[in-house]
Amino acid sequence: MRRAGGSVCLFLFFFLWQNAALAATTGEMATYSEKAVDREQDDASFWKRFKVSGWLEGIHSMRIRAPHDPVTSRLRLRLELAADMGWLYGFASADAEKNWEIDSETGVEPHELWLEHVDTRWDIRVGRQIIIWGKADGVQVTDNISPPDYTESMTRDLDEIRQPVEAAKLRLLGEVVNLELIWIPVFRKAKLPEKDNPWAVSSQPPPGVRMYSDDAREPSPSLENSEAAVKLSGYFSGMDVAASAFYTWDDMPARRRAVSRASGVPEVRLRPEHHRMTIYGLEFSRPWSDFVFRGEAAYFVGRYRETTALDRNPPPKDSLKWLLGVDWTPGDDWTISAQILNEKIFGYQRCLGAEENDSLATVNISKKLFNQMLTVSNMLYYDLNDGEFFNRGKVEYEIANGFFASAGVDIFSGKNGQFGMYENNSQIWFKLKYSF
Image 1 (spheres, one colour):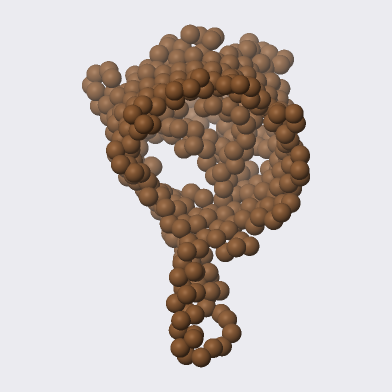
Image 2 (image 1 turned 30 degrees about the vertical axis):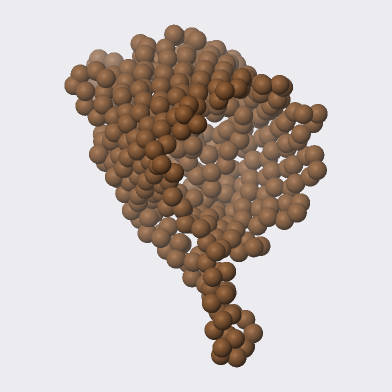
């Protein structure tokens, strides 16, 4: 699939390039000498409309616990092509990856591919794109437009976790208030680790029970299955505020159960399905002195919840997810951020796999040294319910312009919760990245 997608992306790269070239060669007739001079000038001006950029990075890790084998080992190249035609702007990018630990990630795949027109009071972008909402740092509350990619759990940066969606985005720009309208005709699910992935987690059925699982049923591309979102944002008295609504499909499937005892042995067949739901969101941010205070809230209507009982189907439950955070820049290149996140499920039942109130705290501290060439940072996620945590410490040094070397340690700790289940995957990692 990744290789087929790469062929499509390369075709679109050349299509954009060739059509722009044809547009640049048209013009009025001139004398031979004048035409030659004009052509040289036009060619020079034309090629300035294009910009090729990208990056190449390699990352390798070693498990902290014996046998100290790699958990992450990959090389990835991203190529980006931007074309500015004045009234129309185009952007395309593609990834080529060799992954030594997750075979399914090896290949070539298109990333983004969109066209954009910007006017005085409005702009529109159509195509495969990443859409970012919200004010949170390292977690997602109202940021639900681009589904997540958890192929390597939470060890990737949030910019890498977001997946692009095929969408049309229209913004109406006012002096104080902006309106954003989004239409997504093709459903894209969240990506979870599976099969040979060292981040894949399998659940074992109780003794004496046979369990089978079907492939997830995804919504087919159609007008009635499309997703839509609207967001109203504004800047009032030094405060950014926004309200939004998103009519969508749950990126994560809920598994329906079919129980049979015809063979004399209990058999459970799991049938993952994606369900409709609506998300209403609020967000704000307010700078004051050296601080920025921010918050988000998302109300999920009709989200199906997994159960721990093999004979109980997931029931739909409303829930409220909120976050409050503060960023502090005391000077001398220090940055400190802290957040508290909570999700409450209404109409709670004991058979649900999630807790009625789930709370998380995060702290991110970073410091730049040596004329901002060296950055030392630490990000901590702490589960307030179970006492589990995930901590990423990182050191990054800019060796030369665009060339970075970094190293860090990812520590998971806990019993068997969202962080504890990856305790054996705690790792030390090293990365080289060149941006051009």
